Image (cartoon, rainbow, N blue to C red; front, top):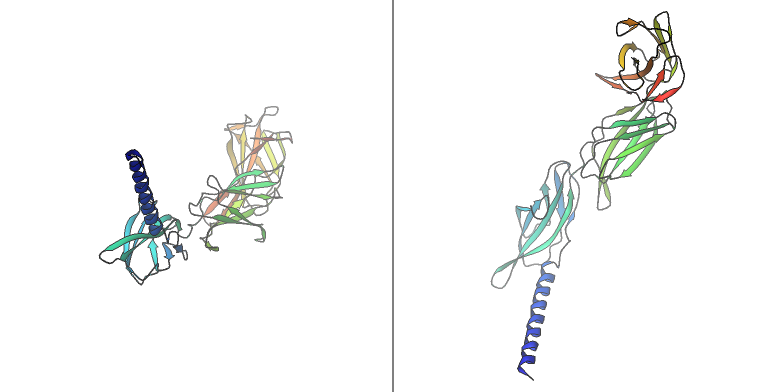
Length: 320
C-alpha cells in the first residue's frame, strides 16, 4: 500500500472515530431530551415535571429565560426531585431547561435532560373589548380586543338585553388583531359581550379571568327631521336598553357636527332644537343630523358613536 493511500486511510479512520465520538456524546447528552413537560398552569408559576434518567444523578439544575440565549440558572435541586415550579409573571411565556449532574467513576458530568420553550402562566384578563363596527344594513356587529400574548385562544359570549346567551364562540389565537362578529343583530337593541382567554397544556384547558362586559349597539335610525318656525324637530327609533341620546347637527355632510341636545331616557324618541351656533334654523338651508345612543352603567357611560347621518328633510341614510 502506498504511503499516500495509508495517510488517506488513517485520515478516514480518524474522521470516523471523531464522528462516532461526537455522535455518541450527542446521543448521550440528548438521550432524555424533551422528557420534561408542564404539569399544570398557575397565575405566576409554571409547574414542570420529569422522569429521573438513572440512579447516578446527584442533582438537577433548572434554568429559565425568555429564550435559550437569555436562560439563566434559577434553582439547584437534589437527586430525588422530579418536579419544580418556575416563578414567572402572569400572562408570560418562558423557555425552561433542566440539566442533571451525573456521578462518574472519577468525576461528575453535566447533561441536558430536556427543555421547553412553551412554558406558560395563566392568561391575563382580556382588556379593551370594544365594538369595532356596527353594520346596520347587513345586521352585523364586529368586536375586537387586545391580544393576550400567551393565549391559545378565546371564548366569546354574546348576550341580548335580557341577559340571555345568544351566541358562544371559541376562536384560535390570532397573532395580529383578534375579533369576532355577532350576526342577525337588531338595530334597536343593545347587546353585551365578554371575552375570556384560555391556554391549553397537555390536552387540558386553563382559563384566564373574563373581561369586563362590553356593550354593543348602534345609533338610532332617524325617522324624520324638519325645520319649521326656526326650530329643528328630529324623531328617531328608540334603542331598547338605552338610557339617553345625544343629537348632533352640522351644515356639512361629513364634518363640523356639534352636539346640540342631550335627551335623558331611553324610551324618548323625539327632540326639538331651537338654535344651532346661537342662530335659529333657516328653512331651505342644508342641515345634517345624527343621533348617538347612550348607555349608562354604574358610573360609566357608553356611547354608540355614529357611522351614519341624515340630511334634514330627507329620509335617505348616508355613511358618515
